[in-house]
Structure formats: structure tokens, C-alpha cells
Image (cartoon, rainbow over all chains, first blue to last red; front, side, top):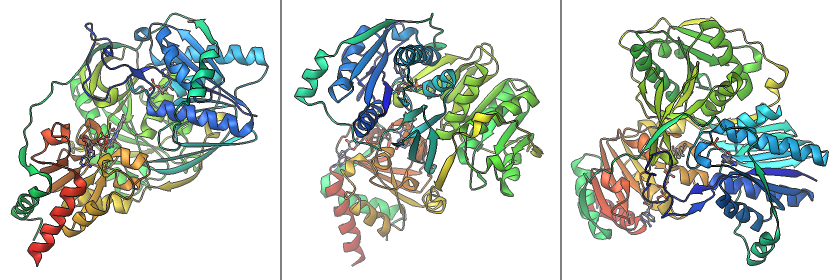
Amino acid sequence: MADVLVCVKRVPDFSGEVLLSDDAQSADARYVGHTLSNHDLCAVETAVQLAAATGGSATVLTVGSADAVEQLRTALGVGCAAAVLVEADPVTLGPADVAREVAAVVADHEASRGASYDLVLLGNDAADSGDFQVGIRLARLLDRPVVTGVQTVTLDGDRATLVSDVAEGRETYRVPTPAVVTVLEGGVEPRYPTITGRMKAKKIPVEERALSAEPVGSGRVRLRVPAPQSSTSTLLGEGPEAAPAVVDLLQQLGVAR
Amino acid sequence: MIVVYVETVRGVVAEVSLEAVAFARTLAAAGGGIPVDAVVCGPLGDAGPKELAEAGVRTVLHADTGEFDVFSGAAHARAVLAAREQTRAVVLMGGGTNRGNDVMARVATELDVAMAANVVAFEGLSPFTVTRQVVGGAALEEVRLGSRPAVFSVAGHAVEATPAETAGPATLTPLAVALEPGDLTVQAVSVQPVDTEAAGNLKSARVVVGAGRGAGGPEGFGDALELAELLGGQLGVSRVVTSLGWRPHHEQVGQTGSRISPEVYIPCGISGAIQHWAGCASSKVILAVNTDADAPMMTKATYAVVGDMHEVVPAVNEEIRRRRG
Ligand SMILES: Cc1cc2nc3c(=O)[nH]c(=O)nc-3n(C[C@H](O)[C@H](O)[C@H](O)COP(=O)(O)OP(=O)(O)OC[C@H]3O[C@@H](n4cnc5c(N)ncnc54)[C@H](O)[C@@H]3O)c2cc1C
Ligand SMILES: Nc1ncnc2c1ncn2[C@@H]1O[C@H](COP(=O)(O)O)[C@@H](O)[C@H]1O
């Protein structure tokens, strides 16, 4: 029976152009909406699978604005059983703040349940701030081992086997639980919420909490979006009809005979 | 003092680490010529000290006891902390790889200071300010690293691994690291390093045919592979492709993959995100194929063909074969 806590971050859904707020302290998501990053979606999927496989449960947690309940509902809709919102203005938070708040919730929950979360899962890096560190800071506060950049997680009693297949190679880790793991997309396929899943999710109450301490922030001075460059390319053609022009060029460059 | 955490793959210094050392040199120069030292954990081949000397390193602090034979982020972080004690470093930095970010984040956490991941430039010494990639590279963040030491990682291939004007002695010195009980709890039980020979072939190829999400699935690479073969080149792919498991990791081009510099790069169905661009920007000629004429790869390329790669690439292959008769 594994109990898993999974931490998610509400992030702007950027696929096209990125706009900034007037004070250049955050991205302006008014026109694009919000989502969970692929890493976080994979962390949620992993949590739900582990809970189902062991007859345990998955709890989802976010630190952020009241609007982030939308992202908690997404996770509840795919099988998380409980949700926690630590309400805060996200612009004021740095990675150390998020880690401290998550650690506070973990300590509280574990004290009242009298048992630890076997695993705390997070994304490897947030899609917006990309700090690459909340998991490591959290593990230090909880005094638990941490493995980053993991794609698949299996639990066997009080040990977890973690595999990451990344640019440096494929690595397998075995660690004792309780542990902290950060998840990289690619190992599992996140499921979509079903209608019944969404209905059920609506009925689950969200535990709302306040910050446990004043945020220290991120040291951000400002954000900047590089000016878009005008095209410098020469159009060779469109569709398969461009093939002769392409091969002419390759011959001219001396790479095709 | 600046300490750079240098990663090795089978005893060979990683290119991103040499890039980080080159970055450290610009910092050192701005600071009035402060020395740059390197920390290496585990086996280091004979070429290592020479490469680090050419990069301008003063001392190579080598943690090479048995505990460092396999990777442990906590142990490597402990080595960087030991090096900091020894050198009184004011800056600790590494490359922006999975490992580099893991180790530097552990170092920063242990010292209770901030850490900036994927830095691309440094703006000023006092206050110490750097610029880093955020929002998947679509935006940049200027961030102040107020406390000492400043801890950060340098985005892969954001700077070039140029040699130093004057080589350093790169004196190899054993580094004593007092590991704590928990440091070896998390150790890789098995490691299959990426196929460095195949990655080497990609890096030195005269022609690279690229394929990204536009390939559509694991079966979508046949035409691109055939074109690579017809041109005596190699296939290179985007991270989406390796993350989805469509192609192996050694084929990845970009910030967290290989940096290529072929005569011709032909990216097909690759949008040209900044992290991909970091790995292919030094190609002499780029010929992009994409259904979207406005994709960054199409506007930054030397030449562009608007179209479906599954129609354009076979037609090109056919034309090459026809001309060969
Ligand atoms: C820290 C970090 C490190 C990263 N490192 C790397 C790295 O090393 N390498 C890397 O590549 N990425 C890296 N990325 C990811 C990068 O940001 C992009 O997500 C990735 O490069 C996108 O891959 P893509 O171009 O294949 O896919 P997409 O961005 O989805 O683009 C697909 C493109 O294909 C086109 N297309 C679709 N169908 C067709 C068709 N039939 N014919 C022709 N064109 C078609 C589309 O118009 C689009 O332009 C990194 C990201 C982060 C945050
Ligand atoms: N505000 C937040 N609330 C909950 N989890 C978060 C928050 N910020 C970051 N995380 C988690 O930490 C991971 C890594 O974030 P980062 O270290 O900021 O790149 C994310 O993928 C999330 O899983």
C-alpha cells in the first residue's frame, strides 16, 4: 500500500509567442490559459499508477493562487484521491519557498496519519521557471534520499527502483523509501480525465492552507523575451516539386553526386 | 576562486564541461584574473588534464576513491563542497546537464544559497547578475545571485568550448572528500552510457539529416534515414523524438544532446526551439523542411522548403537516385 504525494505547478500554456506582464516579473497568460507541464503530468500519472498497483492513494499538492485549483482538479480527475492548495501569490515564490511549503505539508500530514508518504513525486523542472531544484531542496528538508530525472518508478516493499533514460545514458537506481523522486517526461503516457473522473473530482474537497513562512523569493530582476528575428532564409520551393531545386543545391554544396 | 564541476563520460571530459570552463574564464577575466579550478569525480583518462590545461584550468581537484566509481549526485556534490572549502571559491558552477543541474542544486541546498540553472550570460559582478533560459527557452530571466558562493549551471552549447589564450597548468591534485552516511544511499545500480562512438559519428558528420516530431512516430524516419545514407551522412533528432522513445538518445541534437557542425544540416519537421538550435547553429548551411513556413527553424535556416517531410524527403531521395541513373 503506497501513499504518494505529487507536487504540481500551474504554468502558462505557451505554444506560440510568450508575452510578459507590464512589470516584467511574470509571463502574461491572459490570452493562453494555464496547464500542467509534461513532467508534472507524468509525475501525476506515475503517482496514480503506483497507488493503483499497491492499493494505496495519491495526493496532489500545489503552492499557488486560488486559480490553481483548476490544475488540482485535473489531477483529481485522473485518479488522485485528495488535494492540497497552499495559497500564495506565485510571483513572490522561489524554489526554496516551494520546497519549504511542501515540507510543511508533508510534516503535518505525516504527523496526523502517523505514517510517511512512501514517495513524494515532483516534475524534474518547471515549464516556466525551470529551476531544476525544488525536489532536491525538499529532500534535504525532509532528510530523504532524492533521485532526479526519473522516467519510470516501481515499488517493491520499502524499496523503489528508478530508471532514467537520458542523453547521458540509461541509469537504474534503487533507493529505500520514503524518498523524493523528480520525474522527466517519456516513461509513462499521461491519461486524460474521463467524464466520470471529472464528476468525481468535483466532489473531492480541496484542503486549503496558508503559507507557513514569508517567501524569500527567487532573486528575479526581470524577464525578457528576445526580439523576434525576421526571416533570413531563401525559399527553395513548396512540396515535392521542390526536389530538383534541393538536389541542385546539394550538388552545388558538394554533398550529393 | 572559481570552481567548475567537470563531468566525464567513461573518463573523457564532457564537452559541456569545457564550455562551462570557457564561461568561467570570462567571469575570471571580469574579476581581474581569478583562477579557475576544476573538480573531477571518478576515473579520468590521460587526455583529461591536457584538455583542461588548454581550457585554462589551474588545478584539477580529483576525487578518485572507489566511492566515485559510480555516479551519486550527493557524493559529487560533497566533492564540490570540499573543493570550495579548499579554494575558498566565490563561484561554483557546472554544465546544464541532468547531472550538472542535480549536483549544483545539491551544492546550493547544502550551502543554503540560491542556484540559477541554465545560465547563458553573465551581466555584472556586483551585484552578481546572470541571465538564464526560462519558459523552455522562449524567454530569458535576469537573476541576482546575492549570496556567496554564487552557484549556477551553464546551458549546454550556449557558449563555445574555446581554448584559453594561455593554457593553465591543470595540476592534478587528489581531493579528499569526507562522505556522510547518506551520500551513497542513492547510487546508480546500473549505468548504460550513451553510445559515444555513434554520437561521435554524428558530431563529425559532413551531412546531418534531422527529424523531429513531424516524423509522426517511430516508423516515420525511413525517408530521412535514406536521405542521410544517400548523402553519406547521419540522422540527428530532436529531444521530443528521444523522449518519446522513437529514436535512441545518441542521435539527439541540442543543448542536452550533441552539438553538430556539418557542411549541411537538413532538419525536417523540427520547429527549431532554442535548445535544439544550440546544437545545430554552427552548421555551415541549414536547409529546413517544415509544413509551417513561420517555424523558427524555417526563418533562421539558410534555405527552406515548405511542405510535408513525408512528401518532400522521398521526392528528394528519388531525384538523387534518378540523377545517379
Ligand atoms: C532544459 C531543456 C533542454 C532541452 N534540450 C533539448 C535538446 O537538446 N534538443 C532538442 O531538440 N530539444 C531540447 N529541448 C526541447 C525543446 O524545447 C523543444 O521542445 C524540442 O526541440 C521540440 O522538438 P520538435 O521540433 O521535434 O517538436 P515541435 O516543437 O513539436 O515541432 C514539430 C515541428 O514539425 C512541424 N511538422 C509537423 N508535421 C510535419 C510534417 N509532416 N512535415 C514537416 N513538418 C512537420 C511542425 O510545423 C513543427 O514546426 C530542451 C528543453 C529544455 C527545457
Ligand atoms: N508552486 C509549486 N507548487 C507545487 N509544486 C511545485 C511548484 N513549483 C515547482 N513545483 C514542483 O517542482 C518541480 C520542479 O520545479 P523547479 O525546481 O522550480 O524547476 C515542478 O515540476 C513541480 O513538480
